[in-house]
View 1: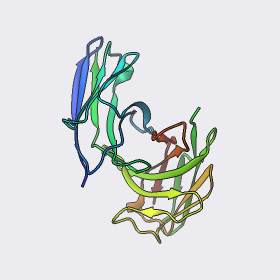
View 2: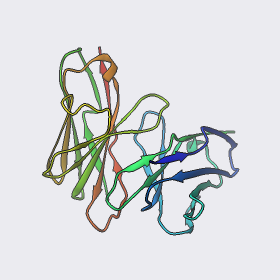
View 3: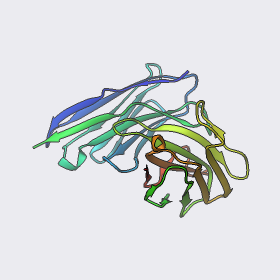
View 4: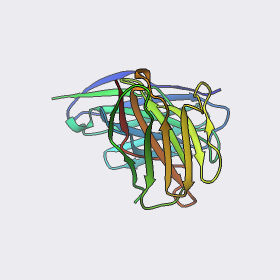
Length: 110
Length: 117
């Protein structure tokens, strides 16, 4: 079966850094995704990791360790507009469906 | 690139009626489309996977006769909620995955909010 865990909520201050962790246990692995979802809107793609290491894309970075079944999304220089839910999702096999974690609601305070 | 549209964005209907939601990939051919449902403050729940030209694969607990999916072309999939009831009120989101070149990434439509009275 598939199991994906991430914290339910996190609060951080504008300008700070927040790290959202995601651990997974899946029967196979073909990549891990991070999506951002604002309330009432559809998810938007942030990052895709299939090899170990850090992928940096502007203020957002995503890290993957396949041996540990672990990923994190790092948000730097937080802005108020970053307040959203962040969804971790795993593709168990090529061409397969994504399994989503419960999402982490991030609240950025002034 | 990789734009997915959904129509309509909002639907309010009476109990017992059927509602059709369209999902289109605008600038790529979507070999696979996915339909999700999301209740307030919850994560996405996959309802079904549809591949162009073949029958959809439904997740456990999703009634295929109630949620009819048609993926007639590489750019269009439709979800029909038949005989809708208030408990079907939810946020329905489709996503599309293209052929090689876009990898495994799924791109989401803007969602359709359904309210059944």
